[in-house]
Image (cartoon, rainbow, N blue to C red; front, side, top):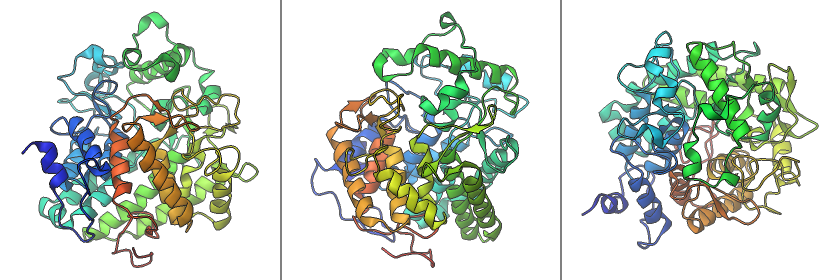
Length: 476
């Protein structure tokens, strides 16, 4: 029996039982095949061709889907990532596979020089990584993975091993990255926020002198269409920022790019709630973490909410103002159930309105304003719809009681994921596949939604769908 068959045939015992897949052509089986094909033995690559290493927030989303196939593999996914954590607490955005040729991806390990340039920051000696970070989805993923098979998790000491690393990760962000002094975390490179090529970065990036084109070779263009990828000018600025950060020993605060991003901070808040649950599972109080999450939510609203625009904005700390562009990042805080009621209602109106068109002109939420001058339905994060952001928004709609729209969004994610061969992202108008196919988090998050029947509820704290131990929340 091959490994794919073992994964797809397994129906693990857990508190919430799901019906087995109806046929070998079901989405469950097809998604499992993608995840098996992308598995390296210790982690899952986003794409064998385009992204042949382990990515930080990809692995968190992938673990959320893997929990439905193999809770053990889902735990291993997160353990592998966190094993590459730096001494200062940061979780690097790439963990490099030494068996992959250096020219298969740029920037490669010899660009980042983590073990030498990052020595002062505590970069590991035995594994090569990048020096920047990605959104902190990891505690939320760890909690959901634990809930998939609590017995296995407790037997392996999964959460006991994860908790100190996750706490150090959050401590790094909260202490080293509050560059604006207002309590929120800043990103120091567009790649850290995850939505690499968003038009929201155009103004902050315009101050950065690009690295000469001859100083680097773009391996991404070997596997992706140029019209779907960032321009050479933007890429030159990305390289310049990363080079300057590396040459400064990966010390925070001195670079020319510093932005408070709503999605990054919303995911930190959700993961603070998850860390509170993890602490309680381990016998410690979670009250301090919940209080911190409440303070962060208040800071998010105070510093980034734009009531006139009906959404959150990025704050450019070097320029000192809110960025006017409308990005899906400004909608992701809908994930937080404790948002003020009027803020959540305004976000839903913006989702449905002409700038994002959900349920009207689009089935999935685009990554950027449909009416914006910079909108491009195919170019990386400048308009296409992504499956991970729509998964987050599906949870957000449920958290605020909008189950009808959440159900419609769930069905759209499942339909388009299957129809496009689990594409990296899609044209928000036509559903045309863009980027890589057989993409890791698309398969994983479609699998997660496949195992959540329409009309389900989410916990009041937003930390776990079908989390029956959430005494204050709705029940499935």
